[in-house]
Length: 295
Image 1 (cartoon, rainbow, N blue to C red):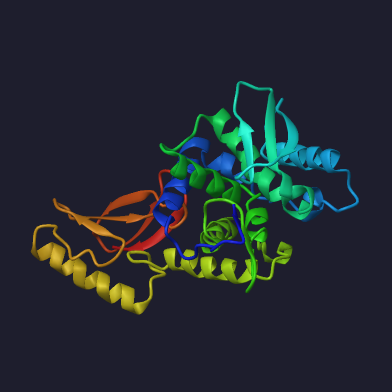
Image 2 (image 1 turned 45 degrees about the horizontal axis):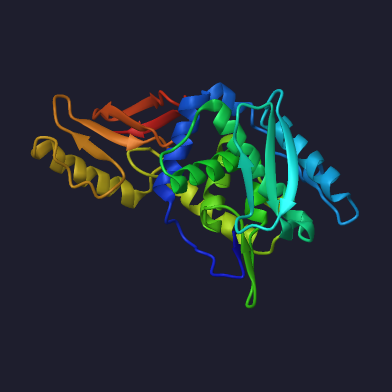
């Protein structure tokens, strides 16, 4: 939790974020991911200063348990002084104990964001899905919360001005924006009307720009003229040198007959390998997305 310190920007964790999206599709299946097509809505997690602190926190936690479809899981919320924003005790259940930083007693609007992350820890624990190392596992948790419909709360908790700053989670604001945009492109859901933070929308639009770029990389037919020209040059080089391409883009060529090109699925980032044979439609084996390509 950055609180008054420097907020990191950009995409330093992008490869781990993309690996987390792939892992979600692999572990959950595309059909299960699609059951999260509707995000948590602001009215379900609203928290005013007039609400009782503990009852309100329990209510928000219950809504997140319901959203994540965690059967027979009860969240017990308490507050204490601590360095981190929150902590959850992962055990066999059905009760899980979540501790929130004391600062949330007076920053209640961000309780939903902290709980979105901690309840996602429980969800991933029950799925037995994790990444090695604390840092990567926390990035997985932030990414999963955002992609499965509760992470807009985490981006909305980001605020920064000349004298103060706040950010929850391990992702940068732009990385939250990227994951939310990847979700928005799949489910046709725009989270931007829910943002109350003045800095959330610009971070989202920057992430959206990168997410759209994923969908315009060769050999996808949606690639622009410059990308298609670069791809054609690399393909010629690979054909002339036994499969060794220049690899100036996100794709690579595998030697053999026929020559194959490997590139990331724009939806789930799984690597796809297909023969180089011109226009072709390809279905991703992980997320099921059908792609128009010109290999």
